[in-house]
View 1 (tube, one colour):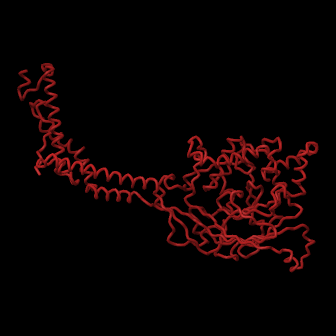
View 2: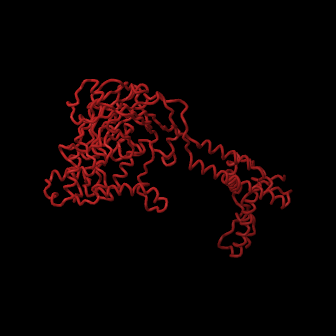
View 3: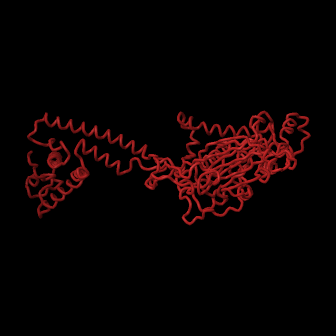
Length: 565
């Protein structure tokens, strides 16, 4: 007791009673609270935030202080709500799509890739679908069919209208030879493409077109990337029939465009201007005795799809018809969307697009939304049916669906399309969402205007004095494709609200409501973190003496009293 009352003596904890310890703690708590109050008053008297200086002013009545506190809180609330709205807009809609300042000449983009599929899926000398259809319906005649004819029929059934064989028992779950059968019985390139003219010069169609496997069967494509540049051949089955002829390595990419040192005649090919003389002209041919009206219905001729060179064709989704005895002219107007460099650091989900290096596809080297969706439906079909459609990319371990699985893979595609609607109701339906097929950050689409007229090719033959007897059963059509204009306006994704805009808007609101600047925020941090430690350190330095005073008798903070306002 005596030692604890001596100012310059250090008390021994063994000589201090419980009552004295409680008294010491109470004194420390009071002095600690007085120190915090002094620190708060110091901040109020020196703060640059509007209204805060009135909180600690001793000459103000309690009603005035309440007035300023309520006003300050209302200002904070209003400012916070407005900043929240700005943040939501910055987070959810950071990108705006606008027109570019300058037009783009057509020679900076490739001429559209053109995929042509004949409606005649088999030559009559190899297979007559109508005849076999009626034989298969009759059980007696069905047993008399040889195995090769029956296998060809089942392979061809996969490219005919699905409802025709819907009630048939074709007894074929997988068919590893489906593609080979389709190739053997299909119309050849030499027969279908009679004459080609590119940029007003006659060329060999065989040099310009490549055989391509699509859901429509064997088709022929002009100006697509070669297999080495489009596909990941190490992932694909070695027999996947995407054939290209005499195509060198490309000097073009979807994001970078043509290389600066690229020649005029580089691949994929491009034109130097607009108009029919600078486009593609094709004379298409079929034979009357090969036409089959049961397999594909009453409209005979060709399906034509326009797509980018780095996109695998999916003809059944978007196509134009070229009927027999007709001339079809397609005037193309490209639409291109680019993305500014300022958006590269954004997450793909925020900018709603993928750059090619951000999204790796399993079977394709080039990322496009169509390529991604093709992989998505392939994976879903494999999960639903245990096999994939013959036209879908696959590896060596994946089976090709047989004719009895036609309904399965068609229903799988329909189900996948419905997942977008079901996902908004039931989060379990998220397969399509997991595919995450956002658009490419740089994309090109080819919109078309179509005109059509009768093609009196027989009168043309008479004019050339070419006897029709030399071409028995021939049926012709003509197709012309060209750019409508020499230049077009591109669209561009750019920042609507960047970080600078967001901070500027927040700073404007803080300044409007509370007069807060960046230094005001630094000031708050200073009084909450730096100033208390500075005071505590000064106190400890002052109290380090040979015979220090008892800590419970010293104030926790020694602060100058703030000047009264």
